[in-house]
Amino acid sequence: MARRENHESIHRERPYVIAKAAMSLDGRIATAGGESRWITGTEARLQGHELRRRADAIVVGAGTVIADDPALTARTSGEVSHPLRVVLDSTARSSPAAAAFSREGKGALLATTAAAPEPRLARFKAQGVETLVLPADARGRLRLDELLLALHARGVGTALVEGGGETLGAFHDADLIDEIWLFLAPILIGGGRAAFVGEGARTLAGAQRFAFDPPKILGADLLFRGLRRERD
Image 1 (cartoon, rainbow, N blue to C red):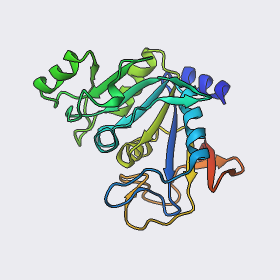
Image 2: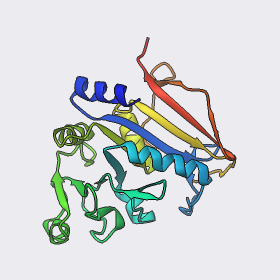
Image 3: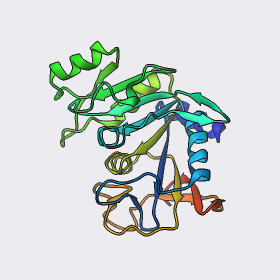
Image 4: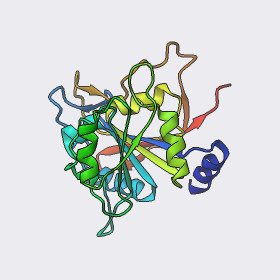
């Protein structure tokens, strides 16, 4: 997989994007009340950490940081590594004290827009957190194509997008997902929070398609790994 990732990054002049979600049978990553730990079991989580270890950067949205305060570290074989953590926060509403903004390893990056008030940005700068102000789209969200260009310029070859649903949905709507890892738990949540939120495909013919490896059994869970297929 690494060979394809590097080829895609060089060819497109942007990082190779892997989308990852741990979800229920009905595609939910959390209950309506926001509970998400833990939908999948230990073996699936270990595989997720291995995926983190191989990525140059981990991308999450502000909602995930505020709700779960994830450290976004990779814990494998008793070792802890710290890829670049990238938090998408168009108004800098998250806290600079969040675990994701630790400066260990490759550090952290707040990706925001001009809509972020300067006093909020000053809090991050005071904590030594690097900020990256990017153009916004028509909905006020930072432009993901500009984000990927900036990450590519920093030497990021592979970006792992972990969530939440709005962030995963935004990458889907922008047609920027090259590979997908879906960890499927044998539970039904109903309602709850969807893995991919956004406009979605308007027609089945226009839906993005992936070529999947045979499912991998991880304890009680299943892993589906798919590579993006070009439309016929």
